[in-house]
Length: 94
Image 1: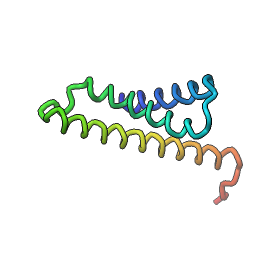
Image 2 (image 1 turned 90 degrees about the horizontal axis):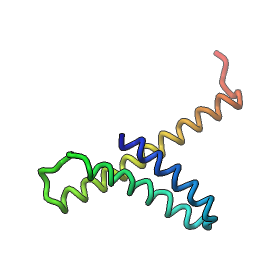
Image 3 (image 1 turned 45 degrees about the vertical axis):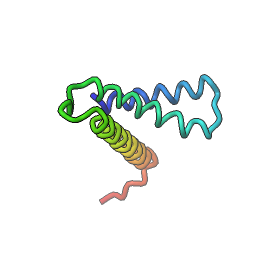
Image 4 (image 1 turned 90 degrees about the vertical axis):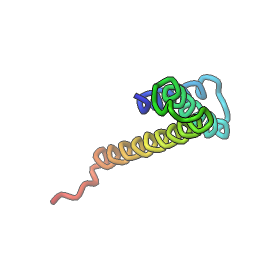
């Protein structure tokens, strides 16, 4: 669920940056922040790790949101790289 929200936040941030016509410098800041924030909100609203103190839980959830964003980003790059190999036809016939 959190990964889906992270992807949705990523896509929302990209479309917002196109609509608002932000500089490329702001794109690199805005897109990860919105994605990580959306993931953090979903994790924070869940019942995950409620036994921890507020500060420890917040840091844990923030770290988890960053890890989820990194995994989603790496997965997206992997899918795009695989698709580009298949589309370009550079597969070695065995």
